[in-house]
Image (cartoon, rainbow, N blue to C red; front, side):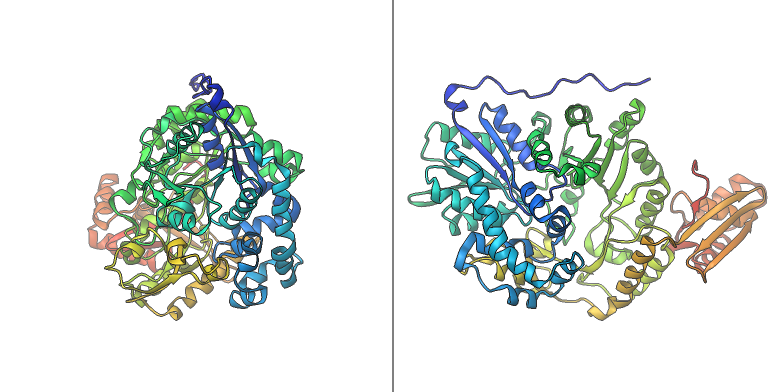
Length: 637
């Protein structure tokens, strides 16, 4: 029996000097970060500060607001990513009378932001109450809850819609304790965005731009020594003469040297607030096994702004990750893990998940993966504990996928969905459109494909691509993007003195050489119906059973579309030969001949049979390649 190596808790702090130990640091996680898991940003930077010998305390005020609003309402606010609603709600708390607009103008501009709260028994007046009374009072309580003056540095991690709540508390801390250094870091501070926030908000003394793992302890050490001329990569510093910009932080090359994140204070605070009954069943521990994107290094997907300026791919050794997970699982008694990686290292299929399978460890995982995984790889991931993936499936049109630079085809995407369904791995995916060079015919064909795969997990949603900072659509002037401006809801959040073209991450735009939005109406309606059926007790199914004379293909696409096909002889063999993976007629003809001398069929004859399966919506074909859609009934296929 194979077992995992005995582990020590790596990277324990060295004995600090007295000056460093007295230099206290507070790290803060503000709303609207989800309260259902600890912040890896806070956990990692806190561990790094402690490893460098500093006293670092972690505060999770997102938990406090979840307890106050109730988790269902709070988590819905965290999930609202289409517009800056979370940021807008904190705008008056952060900017007072300088906050633009009012509740009516915002809700009139973005009426969809009201509908979800009505399902929870609230109405339009609730947004006004949140913005004008509840959230400003919440910030006041955050200010009074901690002796901020006892810290030399208060650091805020800003990701997604955490920025304005962080600014609200940072301003109040600075007003009450002007000697305290305020530091902002996180994805919202990368590049030009960080420079603009540092310029626009005097309460910010330092911005860490890029990966903070090496830069932040260096900044702490410099400030503990009372150094005044701070200029090094990764730090934007406010001085009497203005901002000093050291540029982007260099990427961390050896991820193995990073400490295990500290999550103790998150769990202690959640229990103290009475949140554990709500979150305990879904608690998961974030960790990272890599940074960057190995595919993006070669072919940056045109719409993707993730990784900012840190695309270079780096991965931890599998053994090092196993050590980390062992420490976390033992300490927190949780075996559910969420990888924050943007893409799975292909070597992990064997070297990491294979080791977990051999050791019979009961971990379960979420990972982002590339969709070109084979059946055998997906099986190995399942056996190694993966229970949900995000495979980057954004289209079921090979031409659109090519325009995206995805490096996958429609058939590969379907194969991924099929084997994930078979092995019980949930899939997060969506459909997006609006790519220059697309054609109506692409989406007509895509809809035909979607109508064939309703027995597989549906997309989360469908819609036009967002324009993100750092994406090729944003940075590459060869794309026909025009009238680029900050996404409209930013204008309802920040005061006029903020240059939103520099501060925003999402942008409104026009894209040339695309099809009209009406071309997507039928697809959108199909996806909504598919999702509704999936949530019901009447899910569609498409399976096949082996018999001694062939196979039986059972079709259930609703009450009026139920049928069993009896397929025998060479046709049954053709169908099964395309079950595991994608094959050409020539490949199948060759395999048929190897199976039996009686099956000496030409590629044209095989293709004719495959096309007949396609007409029955039992198989999909493209570019003379075919793939069978039915899942084997045998659970041990």
